[in-house]
Image 1 (cartoon, rainbow, N blue to C red):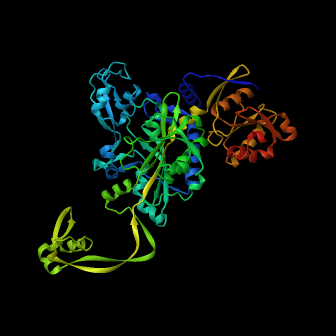
Image 2: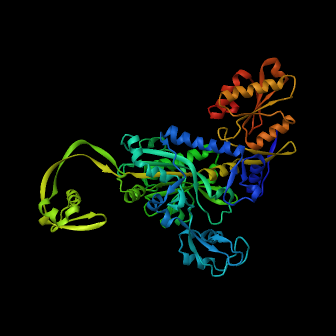
Image 3: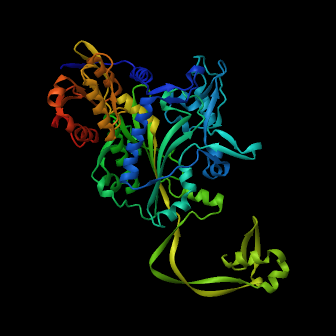
Length: 578
């Protein structure tokens, strides 16, 4: 059967037309005019999204062994004061003087050839935007004022706005605030990790990119807590020889292409900071290919010095190429050092550390302050006991020691205490871990898979639209057709559908229309395999199994179907091996 691939124009329009028509993605509250930055996942889209999430879980929960937690999507203000979101989670915005549309300033500049516009100051951006056309109305922007706009959705917790809260801008903070509980769950041992998949919210200024830029989106994040001095991944050998293209800082500065390098060489050459970052770069590459991303349209780009967060030791983005949007950041992999735990420790007053025991008990000679309560008491009265307790853990100076009580720093002269020398038994040390964070945007990942899997080809004089989705990502895994809806063929087909359902194979029964039209419907939604019950089935108990991508067919006994299809979906068996 001959097929000819058709060159398409704007693939985005073709993909989104199919997605809306077949129930993958719809505009939200469409009957009221819809709102930019929000989408509804239809029946097929919701199922495909769950399959992508479950593939992610197979990598991070099943294989890596990191347990999943679930935290609220609303958090109190103190969480985001500590994380820095209240003060600094903002994009630069301007307003068109003609149409009054609010615009993301750096996006306008980048659309006209300015790279790295997000790193520019408001003044520099305003100068760049002057004279550029407004993307909404086309009129020229004249001396636009550029200012910061905080992206968090603010809310109140409880009646009377007693407590300010925010819809979370990322899932990570819930894992960080649960750190002390997680330490105990993992029996006070490093390394350990926790993962979370859930909704996050960002009040984007002018989302114009469909599923690429949403105000409500799904993140899948892992936070891996490691000893700051031990960043050798215990299972690094699994990906040490894994070769993939990396676009490092040097390649970007010299405008040279990505280099193909193994993970062990990337670490040895200093291209990647440590084994943990390299391991999750490779794992992410592996996962994205398994999900259906085109390897030729995937790159890993290292953050340049002026765009990398000041606290990060290393940071990379997995960027996926879209015909409409160019290179789109889809996954971020970062070594965030101890920034997050340190910030929450400072704000909450808790330690956010792990006790690491020594192999052998150590002894140290230390000097300790013992307050003279006979003179301290009369001088400081009600605060004397608290000052004495604070002195016990303070460091003595030449003239005295400083303590802090209720935010007030008090100097205690040496005449009010004495110093004693003690032999102290040291059994271990408190360590504040560093955090390795792979953070996935599930919606962007899902769109990339739809675009990369979409194809149109001419088959026997007709255009065949097909989504070449991996079998374990496809929303429907097997279609079951009776050749005719009579003579008991429908009953056999329904029975097969039930048998497959018992094996947790998502099968769809379809008896509507000609058999060729049914094949085309299933091709269009990405169903990898189709089972057809015909009149020979009644005679010999065999059915026709069709492969979506090659359109080849084989006959198999009904009894072999569950095991064979399960193996085909899992990828342990290829269709050409049947």
